[in-house]
Length: 269
Image (cartoon, rainbow, N blue to C red; front, side, top):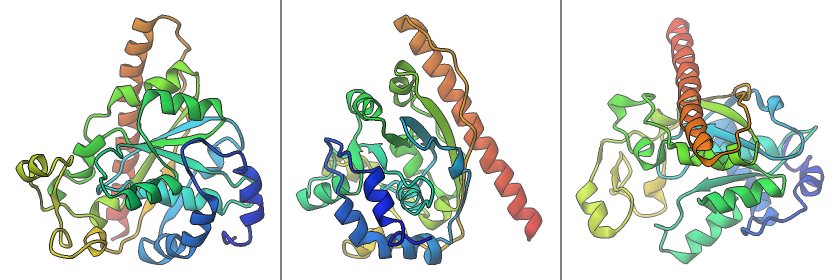
């Protein structure tokens, strides 16, 4: 089912606006491009989306590659096109480094939300789906030779969901590391430019913007796994300890699924 066919259902499901600037019209205008990426450039094979709740808050934790969390946008496209329960997803990430106001505004309209615990809790209170990629910038710029070796998850990104007793779903994406191969990360230049990283790829910085954000084609496999079970805790110390333990468990679940998908790929050769 295409986005255009499910557009009315999507509008109804996402009618309640968040306070962070997401814009359904912008998403509709970019639908052909997102659909082309999903179907023809990255050939995304997504499974497990039916595990997500049809309504109410939930947190999706995944791995990514590249400065822009493209798996989050591919998840957003897949959710838009759901026949039975089209939903909006909000992608919590660092946006402060984007100086160009036009790019920053576009990111907000596409559902990117500046990371903070308060913003996460506000979205959960509104019954929203939220996606977070807790490897952070270290996961986005890891060298190609270390692809699919997850960096340590930032446990503070899980804490708001734990405090609000929200379901947490691991999501593994195989293929994105190959689409955004990192040759090097020029940390010194990044500090001078006051940006979180300066990755060198086959396209960046050789090509002008926006072509330097290009990627290689591929075959992505995205798997949303079963939600992790955890006990609600009351005291601050218990919440911190539980969040730390839960982040390690989530990291292990995502890594195990990536390893399984890699083994399946090798067997298919």
